[in-house]
Image (cartoon, rainbow, N blue to C red; front, side, top):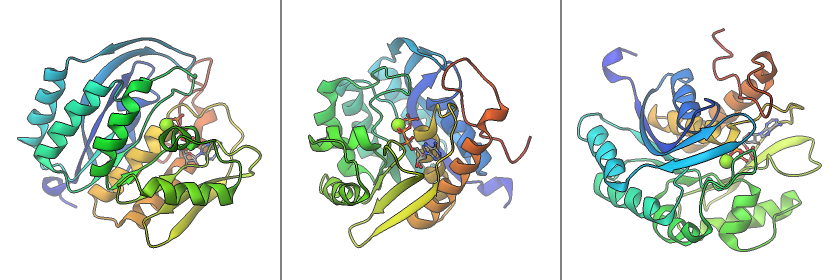
Length: 270
Ligand SMILES: Nc1ncnc2c1ncn2[C@@H]1O[C@H](COP(=O)(O)OP(=O)(O)OP(=O)(O)O)[C@@H](O)[C@H]1O
Ligand SMILES: [Mg+2]
């Protein structure tokens, strides 16, 4: 592919100073999969592999300016949203997305960091559900997020996950990828893709490692990269699942930080 028509993806998310999740993970995943990445920062977090120490929201007019600056110049093929923080930020991002209407929108409904720190106020959930999710081509909740979105208990079996994926589709997104990373006692990491016609299973062995900081951000960005590059949804999810498996598998080679360390985004190159 010539450099003139390299696909472009945009992430709208929070910055992780530790470099393992958020905007930093998104840009690494885009780059590793051959897609040019642009970024709009919604919040700056003071964070490492152990904890989120502070969150500084970016003023709303500056978020709007960033999105406008990107869309007015770059041909964005697909957009991903991650940490949005509060209801006003969700509404601000929704207004710009309604204006620029990206062909693909992947919404990762980020609520809690791997360290357990909150990344979305409870008061923002309704706005996320009613305004942002209906614009999405795909949403990628993990099991705790799915439970919050539906106001129910977290599933403990694959059959419950399947019913939940179908219920999540009624929130109005084009498709749902329910991530099973949090399914206790499962030997495999199983994600379910529900597009209204069928539920497909994407499965890999579960890797025993502490270094899973940024798995969710990375998976959603890898899917977004695939969509930007012209893959259909199933192919984009399969490519992302293969990529995240290899990046988690290689994570222990990095030895970054004392807590939940990052994935090895560039395992293919180093
Ligand atoms: N230990 C593991 N081994 C293999 N795959 C995993 C493991 N943990 C998670 N995954 C996979 O990684 C992807 C991200 O899922 P996960 O449920 O961890 O997202 P998340 O909770 O949103 O992550 P984060 O906490 O980074 O936001 C999914 O494809 C999931 O199946
Ligand atoms: Mg997540």
